[in-house]
View 1: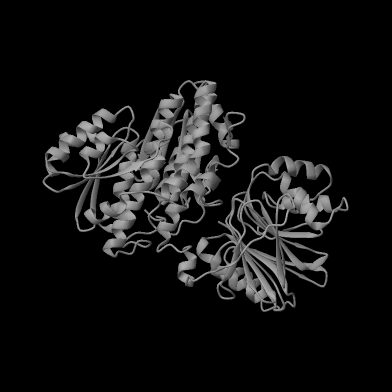
View 2 (view 1 turned 180 degrees about the vertical axis):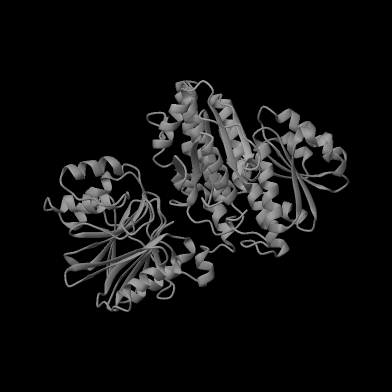
Length: 611
């Protein structure tokens, strides 16, 4: 996600801010900018692209300012260009922002009618103008900020300057992280600890619904109601490398643990429990057009992990919306004569938006009259540019080559699509809709709790890390999940791992089962539970060492499994979210135990941009 830095003290702010932004480059970004306050005026510099472009634009200019803010942007609203780059400003306010403002559109419309000149496509610029609007009504800066925060819906961290006061930096947090750095005679703020560590290791974390005022000799923290909050600082012992990974050993492990937050970000502003609806904007409108077609069908094209997301979606869309769905590897789709036409909605899934085979597949589909709906994580990438509409996941930068949080945010979008289609077709009643949307809203907290207390991983790791072969089985919607689990294990641990539908084992693969062969089985209490139990017992009777991913409290499967991990209950539709996490972690811990390069496994690239 976006990188934020801020400084106030007696030193020149420019080198401190640039150093801080460099420390946050690992997060990924598409533009960068700085704002200083000197001589009662803002000095704002912004560029598209890498931080070096900003440094080149500064071109050695010196700034005397001892107060300033900086930002690296990961686009969520508006394409990556200089106009949309942060900092954004109004007459007396300049700010940087990380997060998503859910209700920015009605606020923007209201401000424009009042004469505010809003020039960017972002959800950020309206915050400057909303604060300015309250300032114009003779409110103080902090009162204007408090009034603004009460209007904003969504998740955000904000760092702001007041043109008329060069002695304070203002910060606010709701949902997106913000950390303060403390040092005698100077204060710092950043979205992540690495930006601070070259200057101080004494930090103070802002919590949700807190607002801070930084002066060079003190920090004052309030809640959003204006009450003073007493906080204590702490000393960070991390190295810089550890700090970039938030204390985790590898980026992949960090990204696995980020999944509750990024799923919440992806759902934000789209899932409406009050109105029992899913809001997908242009994508929703296009889907509604297709629902009216008698021969409407969906063709999903994707590669690797994104293909597994598409396979998962097929179960949801066909079961809930009764729309026929085909799922195909982009690399195969492009070289045959697919039967797509003007009645086909082609759904292209790609984390990077640059996957060469998927890009070729959508070009072929467009030639045959199909419309393209893409699901991507990177705004302005090639696939969204060539699609008719795009739904963006909000996974943020994914550094580890083996995809984790990109997968779960993709299936979050795909599940929203399935529910939306079912609603558009009138196939879900009010109770059926409420139970699904409620479960979706509760999912991030469920996963967060699960991640803090998964039992059985160490035992499974000890079992697997010396094996050369491993087999995975599952049925129904868990079939693509075990394919993803097998892919993760082979990608980063170099263990030969294959996934099979449970009912297919007796059609050949059971010949591979002998005494001691590890078998990872996802057996949850769903419609296929009894059949999966029988499949596992068949493997067990032939010597398989069974590692089970099972429903919490399933004593029968505990008796069958040699080792098991219990997953929490949620709505049956959402079980792929809870079953994939232990498979991701299992792959990670096995790879770490084997000593492989977890984040950059051999022979693999993060984005496959050539055929």
